[in-house]
Image 1: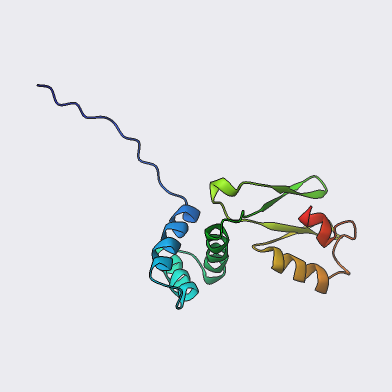
Image 2 (image 1 turned 180 degrees about the horizontal axis):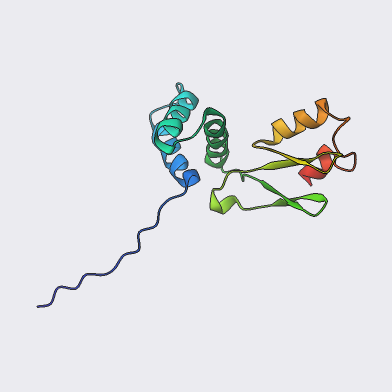
Length: 133
């Protein structure tokens, strides 16, 4: 009898995928301090900073509710929404300034707050409604 071994390709999970697994493990333990536990593990196990870990936590929480995480990408002069909810990559929100520079944010809320408080330097052709479209 011949023993046959099937070759298996090993695929490294992305940080987004690993964070989702950590989130699910921690969520199974209960909601008490879920955010703090997840962020601590993201920082320690995935070599993230607190800000990035916080964004990943929010994305995991959004996915756990069955909602899609939206991704915003720059295409020429407008901001276009691309739905990549299946690939678990972090979302990036871009704001175009009058001088042509672009500032990236890890949440829609941060981008909206920046636009509201810095309207004098934000491109007037780019409104909050344009980003959400």
